[in-house]
Image (cartoon, rainbow, N blue to C red; front, side):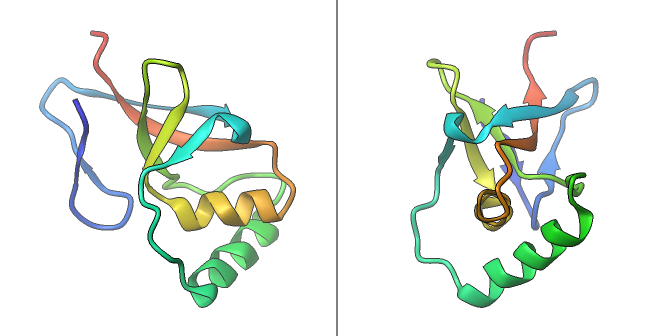
Length: 100
């Protein structure tokens, strides 16, 4: 089940639902949206990532794990690109845990 996204990096969680965060290797990330990105939006995220390094910002990109174990980013691709541009090898992400 995929989460419902309402506004930037916001998801709808049912009562009793659990949202988890964790780090995923950047090589195990897939971007759901392949639309062109604005240089300005990436530049803004790049500076934010750089200012907070080595920490990562929250709210973080959201998504889900595929059957092959790769993480699909549903919202937060600009942050992902900014992290890669800054040399990060892992990304902080969040997902709804369906294994209750």
